[in-house]
Image (tube, rainbow, N blue to C red; front, top):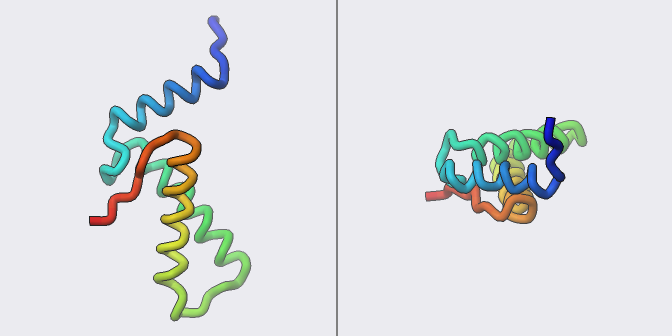
Length: 82
């Protein structure tokens, strides 16, 4: 079995994201984005920030955090706000 470097593995993942249309709902990159955003939401809820008036802001901030991570880590834009 041929071993690949972490850099090579990241390049394979990045290419799959770019080729799949990263801002398209249902794409490979979008799946990563959603999992990151949900982790943010879960962390916020675990911190017991449950004010009903903040739910939209929590969702928006979680998606922003996921988009930032995807851009930094993979160089892809996953924002799909129309």
